[in-house]
Length: 271
Image (cartoon, rainbow, N blue to C red; front, side, top):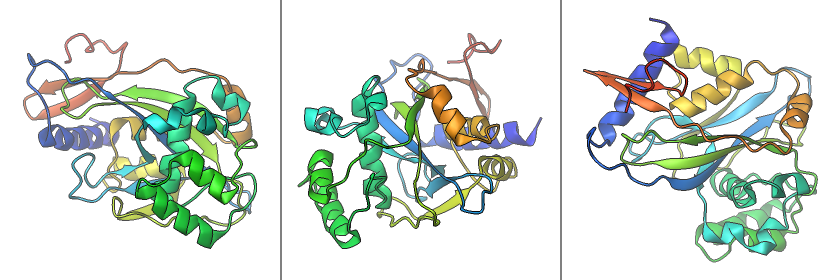
């Protein structure tokens, strides 16, 4: 068995133990969610990095795992004034999810990929209002004068949590590239307790070595990105694309829990 598969089974077994249903129980309905893969290119021209955020060990979902910024899509994310913030390319498919991804990025990290710089002190105050529920994302962006018409971002993929997990999400994954020459420094909320900037290749290597716990969609996304060297070409290739949802199943055998993708010979056996 490969190190990658062994690490995957360990992480999924731990998550399965935290909350699952029986094989004959009715699955819960996945909650619509969005996440954003934040990429940054070093000024020396080295390989691009992505931002991974660590969930606390006490978290109810993905405890101790490294994740991308993200969360549940709010009703306000679909408001016309919020959708108007997006560049045309992101208004074509799942625009409310794209707004939610940007909102979660700002809420969880304090970073805002605006076309023009925003005042840091003002951003801190507005973020507090957003987290307190006194602002929605459109109001926050307006207060800061933030614009996103030049945002370098695409709809990357869509993952649905396996039916055997008790907490399920239908998550839209977006990819964005930050327009900054310096290494961005996130300011994390209490929902997170660490972060790192890392190349996708190194992230997958550390996962296989048992040093970087991640759930299956996160690891699979990074594995796909590890084969990319030119983000500009990747963004052009994916622009306007609407990915089909991917719903892994769990193959549970004794103490072994393994995610299985559609097309795998064991997919029909998995639940």
